[in-house]
Every structure is written in structure tokens, then in C-alpha cells.
Image 1 (tube, rainbow, N blue to C red):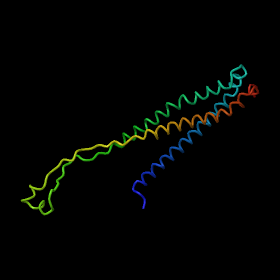
Image 2: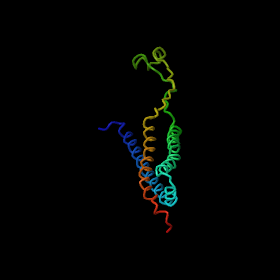
Image 3: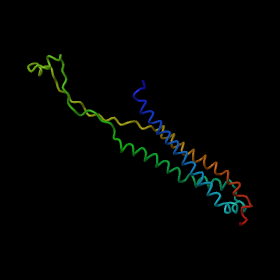
Image 4: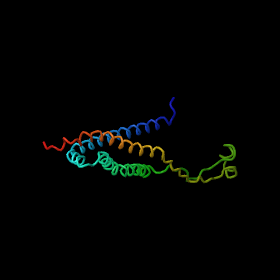
Length: 172
């Protein structure tokens, strides 16, 4: 028989899979936008190369164009995700009630005469247990997203050499 936590752990595995699929789709969209931008500006890039600007400088500028909005967006997404969960699901609490405790057998506690002698009332304190924040998983998600951006830009820069050829200066 499966452990009771297997259901919840399986659900978290599905959430992790959904995040990985979303990151893959986002990286694919970034790749398409990056390649489209390089191809659309091929005459400008070719003119820059023809005037002496090294391709590495153009490549670094494209890298910064991709990283500058991605890094804060990833930080904001992680923060909003953390705060959304904290706001939607308050910390679990328990206690805050009184209970009667019998210090003798059931017969003595049930009797009207002996009940007051053996039954006492105790207050159960209210306890709030905030769940731990998985900082390591959040850090890995953020690092994975930045890594995906870097890999995507690296793949997109493969199109830079062909788009900066001097032949691209000719008008069509």
C-alpha cells in the first residue's frame, strides 16, 4: 500500500513537470524572437561588421538585450509565486480550546460525586506552524531559468555569423 504522502509528493512532481514544460516553451519562444530579431536586423548588423565592429561586441549586446529583462522578470516571478502561495494558503494552526482530562478510570469520572475530584480542565494553546520555504528549490528554478535564457541566446547567436556577412549589405 502506498504511503499517505505519496499522493501529495506525486502532485508536487506534476507541478515541477509543468514548470519545466513552461520553461521549455518560454525558451523556445525566446529563441524564435531572438533569431527573428537577428534576421530582421541583418543589414544593420552587416553594416556594423563592415565598419569594424567585432561580432563579439554585437553578440554581447544581444546577450544583454536578452538578460536585462529576463533576470528581473525571473526574480519577480519567483517572488510573486512565493507570496501568492503564502497569501492564498495561511499557515496551519491548531489548538485554542479547552478539554477535560480524567485522571482516574471511566467509572470515577462519570459519577456525579467523584467527577469533580478526578476531572480537570486544561487549556490547549493555539499553535501556528509556518511551512518551510524551499529556498534551494527556488534558487534552482531561478538558476535554471537564467541558464535556459543563456542557452537560448547561445543558440540564437549561431545565426549571427550568417546574418552579418558582407553580402547582406546589398539591397534586394
